[in-house]
Image (cartoon, rainbow, N blue to C red; front, side, top):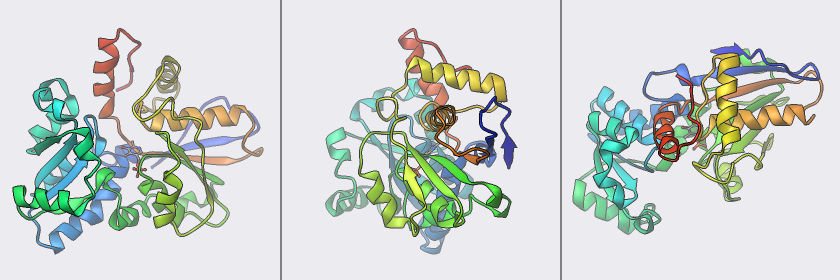
Length: 297
Ligand SMILES: *Cc1c(COP(=O)(O)O)cnc(C)c1O
């Protein structure tokens, strides 16, 4: 569903947001798209267990845990940070995943870096038996296929499609289904230039660009300006944004509009990829530092 954004914008620019965050109450936005064909494939392969990877506040971990419960898979989450095992009660994401029945394997950050290596995966198979592996963030060819379903015929009128970028899976699907007259702008939520190569692995076209100025210091990093923007955007539009991905992307788009980046009368579509479950965890962190909290939801 696309929603018009009533926001004071210069140069005849119009803005709509695709509310992928409303697709499912617990399997948030793009994670729903990314899991769809992966879980179908797991069924085809007759796997009973789905194993995946993620950080402490991962939207993907929460989504896999809930989808597993809903569709009858056992789920295992390999979690980055061996110190988190004692802190599940303080972490809303891990607590939610555990309540859905997910079993955790907490590993050190060093071990986590090896997670795509054959040996590492063989050790997990020894420990847990056979499983269907979904990579970190859910990104693989099945995820891209699901994300190609985000844009539909009604979106042909837009000149620009903007989305947040983590591993690059979502934007790859969007690029593949965008029309020739459309340009796809990705806003990475993290630092680093490896993303372009990741996207080129899956994307079949060249009609895209990464805007790397709005990561706010890196993955999971926020500042007061961003939090205030998210709160103000919510008051003005009633659209809640998350602080890790969509908040940074929408901040970036509005900033670029105000700086005159887009041609006059551009029609821009923002993709709301969800991630709202992360607000609670971020607020716990902000509260412990006595900082301004996110007021949405
Ligand atoms: C995971 C996530 C992303 C990043 O998606 P990728 O396919 O990894 O690039 C963007 N937005 C939200 C809300 C997410 O949860």
